[in-house]
Length: 424
Image 1 (spheres, rainbow, N blue to C red):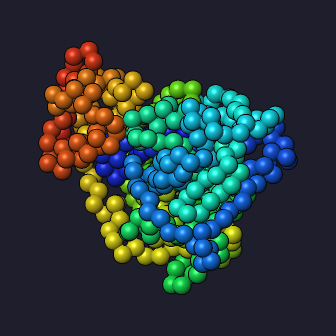
Image 2 (cartoon, rainbow, N blue to C red):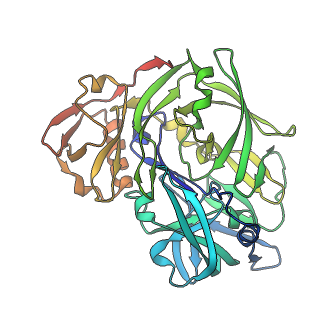
């Protein structure tokens, strides 16, 4: 399993202020066939003859959040195609049956290797639809989503998602679950490859420097950024292209904070065509790339540009034009040049620095703890949502941001455009 909490690189700094969790479960070669069958086991019972169920969802920190009843307890879960398993907070597994002899090997975001036991739930209720005998893996949600979500219990992974078909109305925050595929109508179909630990979509990219990229992107709804994340192998093709440059923490896993890495956000939009087998959708997109060697990822922001269907039984997405405004249309290009996060101790700390006129003196460092923001004690911000909302207003008002580090050093930052550099 990979539980990755990545710094989001969006068109404006307030998105920079909110870490984005990227969860994925990678089952290693040691996993036997019996365990693979166990993951795909379980059954679904719909509440009525139509074999459909409608429920509300939330968009919190840009994740898709469902209220789900597991073994009789109603909690919040992230809907996450990046995980082969579903996961439950490790403190909440007393009502689960431990599967004797079943263990899975996984690697977290900081490269630490772990083993975990597996548990089975008697009942998972999503709306009125019941999923029985679902396998869960225990997670430390306090580490993975520290300061971001309240009452967060875990993730709903492919072992549940693949059992039904899903229709998302992002304008109304409605999901319809169905046992039969949804109709294409006037939508555009994109086929994807889907089986255990392999949930990918092909993408062709024509770059403005004349180069071309053809690759498979992991479809990861646990990644909430508004860009496509490309792995380091493509950096050579992106040389000479213009981008905003950031250094910051790219992963927080069960074992702690990952290494500082370089990230580029391309300034020029590039032509992207998604899909395989002749079922394609063309889109102009800005791309964020990271210098690490992880698999390329497409996050849920791409999908939330549309109202969309995931026909799990056919391995097809269907995209429909949204009626409402997408979040990208309202984004500002201004930035304070810093990314902030909240750690397990509820401290605000610097998770990233962008090349920005605010930061010319080099005295701000990644990892520094902040004591005050505009005179407000860091403890006044209960979670990342409070912090994001406060900083959203500061940017909207074109206000300065006075930050005070734990050592007492003070810095006045102003809304400025990030500097654009060529990828070297």
